[in-house]
Length: 436
Ligand code: ATP
Ligand code: MG
Image 1 (cartoon, rainbow, N blue to C red):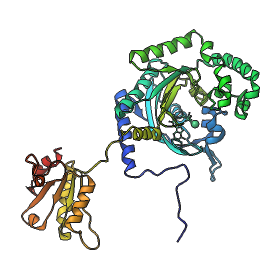
Image 2 (cartoon, helix red, strand yellow):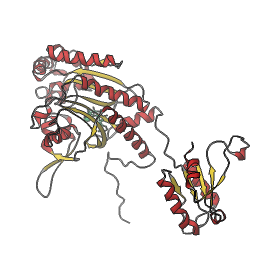
Image 3 (cartoon, rainbow, N blue to C red):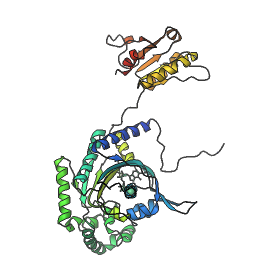
Image 4 (cartoon, protein in one colour):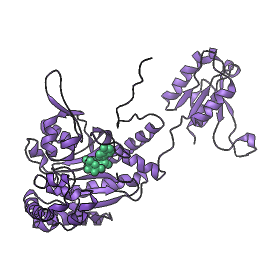
């Protein structure tokens, strides 16, 4: 036998019953996006490497060490499996002039790829949902996006997700802060780790993001970007906060919140939980007014967020909020293999009426005993069994037996009993199958 093949490390298969949780999450998201006026956008999984190098910035974790980049063997193009989708959406908006008649609210859902060390809540292929409001200066849409996420937690029944916000100001303000920051860090060069030393002059802001305990004191004492913001940036931030307050959305200002990507300015925010260990950020985003220009387009303001679907599902599990498995309305018990040709078209007609019905499938020995068929019917979670016995079929009838709730066998007077229904009058029993 040939060697068994397995999936690539850090890339997961999603099969039943877990796939039902994904579908439920996706459905919930789509409904919510629709209500807020965000429309679906789908971009390719592969982009030119230059898009991410230019879009995310050369000195970011993603571009430095996490991208799956390769050379197309046939034409030598430098390509990358998308590590995130904001750059792709902006490229698409520019390429198709999506902002020709004003701002656009867009959302996407799909797999992203980063070569990281796989662990709980961190995978190499993972899935993000993103919402992007393109062409709006804010801060109203900034607040709208935050509130949209809050409504998602509410819709999913999630609790204990906290919001942190900050303002990154504008490039000139960041430049002034950057000088002060470098000066401060240079004064404490002895405690900086290798990563920090390397970033001291290329991306010192990112040093504030460090998880190294030895550097916490120095980082805590570093000058705050907030103190370098001018009147306009401060006004944007204040209005953003007022709008969150108007919704009763609670938040904490975290002056060290800087985000991994270079393209952010003004509002930045993260939704975090303490229930997922060290991978506690479930949703993150902010304003990125500079990105359109950075990828070669006419400047346009924009703001958005991305959430990690695996982390949301993990949190749903943690909080016992995952939905029950979907079950069919009915399970068709077919005692005699010879009846299958008569039964299948009836089941098809039921499905065309919107009834979910699963047929007992035969094996080489026939259909199996009634007992084993009822066991399967029970396991399917169906609320009814449809019993297509040969005698009943000969009389043009089918037995409809409730499988859930109180049973007449147990002496419950309120229990629904098994009834015989006319095969050729679907409407009569579709009504029963639809009842809860
Ligand atoms: P982290 O600090 O956890 O690495 P990040 O800043 O790299 O996160 P973003 O690029 O902002 O993350 O992505 C948005 C969200 O996508 C994250 O908040 C997280 O929920 C999710 N995410 C990011 N990387 C991964 C991954 N490798 N596996 C699973 N989810 C991820
Ligand atoms: Mg990361």
